[in-house]
Image (cartoon, rainbow, N blue to C red):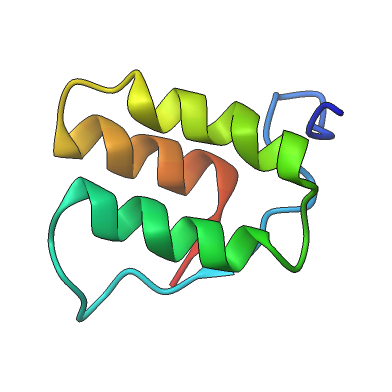
Length: 73
């Protein structure tokens, strides 16, 4: 199942995730995003975003994925 996006390609049902104050590594970011996604997305939708996380080469790119698919607080 695809993630629904608007005309600019931004997901319309972005789960809220808190990334401040936690551990500063890519796996902590992925874990926080996964926990936030459970209430909103299907497993297949999360799998699509997880693949985007795993394809990143840096922490900065992982944060870009997080801010694209999640409402980061």
